[in-house]
Image (tube, rainbow, N blue to C red; front, side, top):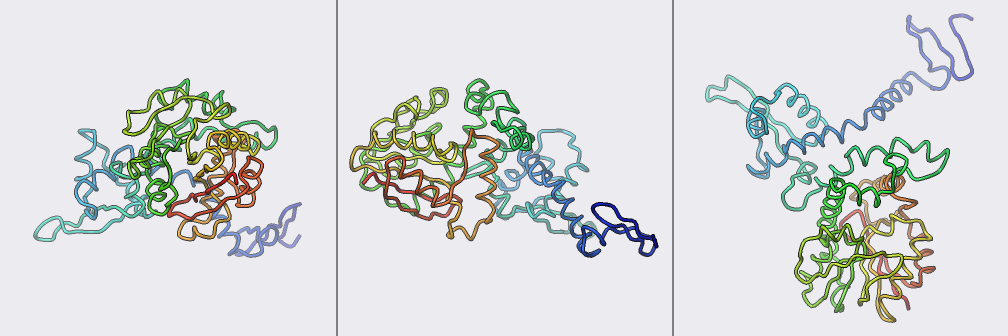
Length: 379
């Protein structure tokens, strides 16, 4: 066949003694090689997050930050702060080398002696690693929760969900996420810490832009976890009487918070009465029909002149240009992994759910975060 063999998918040509498939699926050798490189990147995409997880568990961002925000430390200086008398410096170097290449850390060279004989690498923080310093506003707890084995396991069942349907988290862990967390205190603590860390980040953005709390005397945070969000609202607006409403096993671990009363219950059965209902990252956990049920309970709770304040992703928002445009659809896949039919929604999908739930009028308000505010009214 003149040096060329074909099958159903592609041809194999011999060029300079090297077999190439560019005559079939691929249009050129360049496309073949670039596609192979991209396929390798997808194959090892998990390495990024797990390498970062190892750095966070070792406390490396915190070790550097404790010196100064722009400090740089040598390998031996970092190792001196690790919980080991004899850490494996070769392993540490290789992890740091990778994370520098990924721009999670920065690196610079410096002379280690006055004579300038030895050159050493020194490591510092980047904007990304500053977000994973555990003190202050941090994403560390969210990263650790999302990369925990329990959280990752459902992702291995996506193909099964396509073919057979069902809930990925239940397939992986034997129960829905809320039931699992209730029965596993360690995971419940990990999950609550992640939600609290997200609340700190998002509430900073909400309070910096949203003025709609000013007229309220009372507010109930539905699905408020351990109360981080409502505590921040009450702190900023002391005249507001705050209620934190979540499942009994969740509020059982909630700390005492000034101006906040913790209430355990079921959002599908009732919502405590207040001038407004606040829901941050709650509605995306549920399918449309359940969101409508939740909204109807909220409608009963707020009376004729109240409102619902939803903080959630709006997929078609044009105001999130500074963030990765794919983040919203990444979180939509997280909903497949961790929820029972939840999803992220476009503004048109929000409109449909809100109207069916008794809220015919709403505004979308942009904030400096992945989420937006959806302020909805029953009149």
